[in-house]
Length: 105
Image (cartoon, rainbow, N blue to C red; front, side, top):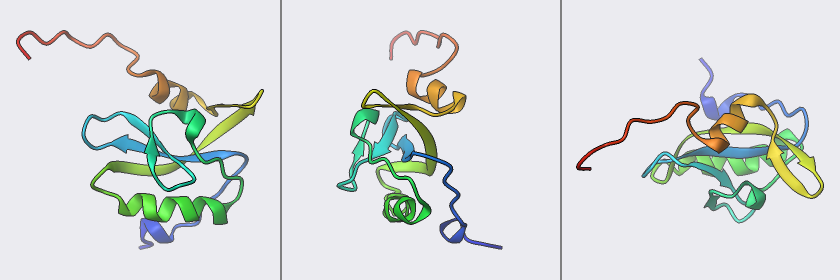
């Protein structure tokens, strides 16, 4: 069985490294300075497997701050970074249903 860190990365266009912040579950993106941000505009955009691996490997090792790290497609339009597929659009906007209100929390 191949380790997740040894799996081949396939890039079919501009992509970012994304995950969920461990403390609150927020969607986060990896920056060129190898930090996490909640703003996709600050994400490092890569276009090949080598560059993606350079961001992905240390991001996966950062299990204290973020979990479920992976490479996600993006679109570049008018100097903006936009989610590249439906899954990433949903993750960026939040739940598709109204969450129950928690009394006393």
